[in-house]
Amino acid sequence: MIDIRPFGALGAFRNEWLNAHYHFSFSRYRDPKRMGFGRLLVWNDDEVAPHTGFDAHSHQNMEIITYVRQGAITHEDSLGNIGVTRAGDVQVMHAGSGIAHAEHNREDEPTRLFQIWILPDKENVTPGWGMREFPRESGQGLQVLASGRTADAKTGALPLNADAAVLAAKLGAGETARYSLAPGRIAYLVAASGTINVNGLTASERDGVAIADEADITVSSAAGAEIVLVDAGAA
View 1 (cartoon, rainbow, N blue to C red):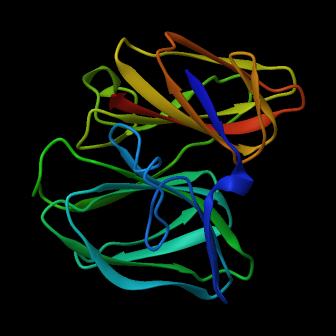
View 2: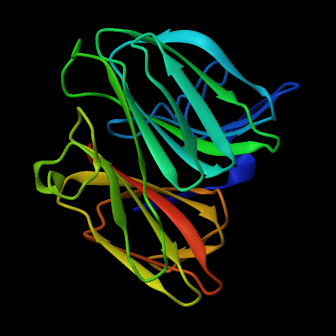
């Protein structure tokens, strides 16, 4: 099963500093058919205006991954962590037993990012935060960015407290990326840029692609694309 969710059909919110689109129910946007997908609870497509951002607020018991597509986001939290995550970088926050954080665009250009929330395996773990640069070049295939799977322990991926993984690839023109989905597991895929073909179906830039009961996933792009895939665990 492959379900294409057009970008134009996503939930949306806009004010003077934030232009957000929601792949799943979030905040005041509610769709009973889109209440998450396996362990994947939230996938927000955010554009944050220069010198604005999210003031301090709290989370518990969630793995929060930020994938920066353009610009940069500055993170500060109640544990004393401060860091700047730039395009090409990824950050993971383990909300665990509780953490407060702020995320601001301190740059002179808009910041565009995906924020992805994944339900953890265990509640009330020690909170934490980490960031890594993941240079993406065409020809590398899907690169594991964050994972809680045992098989990914030595990949250099940021750790997750969940049986899930976040992967990304930059596809050159005509290039193909492949991913094997274990029985009973599901995945969600978005092209950060470019039009892609997923097992014979076309998805445009920023469309959502929900995938289940597909042992092999083949993603290609005639003109080139950047893709992000979440292996969201059991259905």
